[in-house]
Amino acid sequence: MNLEDNILWFKSLRKFNYLNVLKFAKIYFNPIIIVGCGRSGTSLLLSIISSHSNVFGFNKETEVLMHEIKYGKLLTLINNFRKLLPYTGKIPIKKSAMYWCEKSPRNIRFIKSILQTYPNVKIIHIVRDGRAVITSKHPLTKNYWLSKERWIYDVNKGLKYKNDPNIMTIKYEDLINQTKNASIQLCEFLNIPFDEKMLNYDQHSDVKNMHSFHGGAVNKIYKDALLKWKNPEHEKLIAEAYSDKSFLDLLKKLNYI
Figure (cartoon, rainbow, N blue to C red):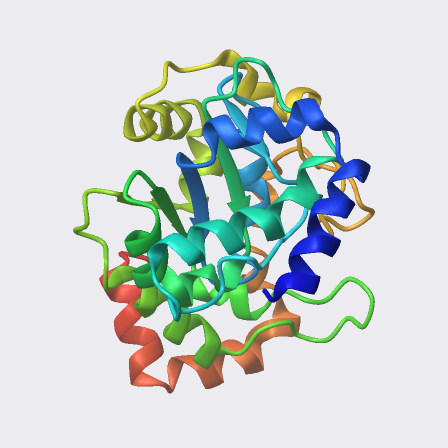
């Protein structure tokens, strides 16, 4: 930012909730970043985590972290903070918040720079059965949302760092079928006590209008959605996907087949 930009930014602070700014500054160095291929449950995961008393969740995809480090770590930290501040004014930050949580699926392509910028970061990589991902349809156009190539690329980007101690890989299906156990494991990874509010996230979540949720509201978990990819309407797409060795190999690697 040049001098003029800095002046404009400081003037814009008057529009912010000062209490929120102070609270966010206090927890800024303790981020929880959710990554994953689109349509893999990143919004659901954010809803569950942000229900915790110790976590403040952004209710929009900020895309602030989607860049490489160009001007050094310090300037990156400062610029990220400036860009995130406008998003803190929408929801009061809990007094008990110790972490902030953000999800932009394409963060998965910038894991290296996120790890370098925030030494205390906790990154949660959520994966979902690729057959369910590629058969997910856009609620407005009814077209298929993502390609198998996108799923393969993004999932492999995340798995590259699976052994990093600051990264946890979790399956979408476990959030559905074993919600409590999955939530307990998340809390253990984050070093925070389990909070029963996570099981009633639709009542307690900071996230109320993520665009990923059709209708603009946080929805309850439905187990019957897990196997919709088996519906006859998707047979051709699934058959084409099965002809791709990379797709099959990744399904096997993740124990989906």
